[in-house]
Length: 249
Image 1 (cartoon, rainbow, N blue to C red):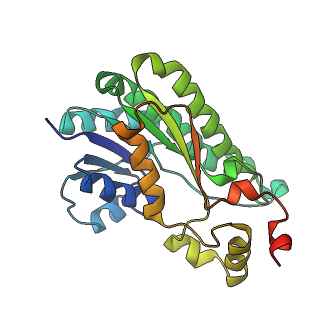
Image 2 (image 1 turned 180 degrees about the horizontal axis):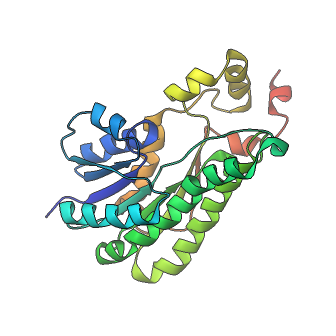
């Protein structure tokens, strides 16, 4: 029986790369998509994976990407829409260019890639896993564009589940909380880190691999009766609401 194939966007680093490695370890083959070709190249050859440099916010690029992936692998069993950008700023200072820069990757990209891959997923009774964010579940400062884009991804996931279920294609959404990525650690001050620890019941950031484990589960046959769900992998952050830090002091 041939190995299953996953198409992962934003696969050159972070959660996308962690998911790639985990799925390969589970016997999958992976099409790694990223617009940063240099970063993909720097990873070198990964057994079981093939790299493709495309921008998921470009409709023509997405169409060509899908054709190349199918030509290389012959099938797609799971789509992980992980590509995203984080551009934070106050609402009044968020001009339309910033708004569109966030939306075109975080929302348009998810829509375009999903739409392009749906015919292949119907053939394999496949799965879509969209990566949103805890910021799509709860509002926070400086995230008017980012948080709104991720909330829209959550609703898009539900639409996908509703429309694709009759074809036995599942669609679910993972909402990571604070994750200990290189980028986060580079920009989070100790004060911010301490504040997150206070607000999260598990009292720590998550790891990229912990998020990847949730994604891999939703891609797998173990989640064969799970669709339309929004799973917060956040150490309990969403469950606590406002005020927990004060209660714990």
